[in-house]
Amino acid sequence: MTAEPLHPAATDERDPGLFGPDSVTWRVHADPAMALAGLRALLLQAVHPLAMAGVAQHSDFRGDPWGRLLRTAEFVGVTTYGTRREALRAAARVRGIHRRLAGVEPESGTAYRVDDPDLLLWVHCCEAESFLSTAVRCGLRVSARERDAYYAEQVRSAELVGLDARNVPSSVHEVREYFTAVRPSLRVTAEARRTARFVLWPPMPSLVALGTPARPAWVALAGAAAAMLPRWARRLYALPGLPTTDAAATAAGLAFRTGLLVVPERLRHGPHLKDAQRRLGLS
Image (cartoon, rainbow, N blue to C red):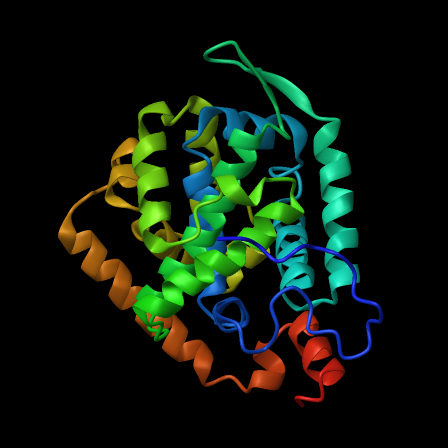
């Protein structure tokens, strides 16, 4: 696949951005299942020791977990629905931060750079695969052709963070082959286990944890995200890797998405999608 060159549009007026309203990406990223998909992607990324070290050593995830999740959602929203100019500007900021970050994974003593293409590719594939597979399992209808189209579209997202399009999986088959090839290098470090516990049982103010349904609601959400991990990833975490777990996770995802679909779109859709719809005269 030859990706379309990334360059700003001559004008932002009616600019469809990198993907446009007819893309599979717009449909997948607007789905309520993205809340589950983001948590699944985070848990999947953590089984790569160097990627996990980068998060632990260069982010404030534990100090401000909601802020980090919101910043990630903001980046996805801008690059999906913003103008080309906005997407390229956001990507340039991220690349500038990544260039300055490096460290050593403590258990193996392996040095890494956050902008290493192998690490960037791992994060990209975890996010794209999680976004698509979670939406499908939660009930979004996406044909086999559209699934391939989604991964082909997501090559543009990979280019934004500095990857060469020629090295990015662009179909269901290529993504599956990528994960098969990388699996021997994956393991759950002590830091990954701490992160998983934090995701599944985050700290909450006592009044919130005891006086509201926030705790059981979050545990149900995060538990479903963990159960939607590939079986091999669940086994790395020493979580159940059984077909019954898959069935239960799918049922929970379907119920979660169905519940959110009753919320009016004006309340459910994020500001970036709404801005894009107004910009393109779709609302």
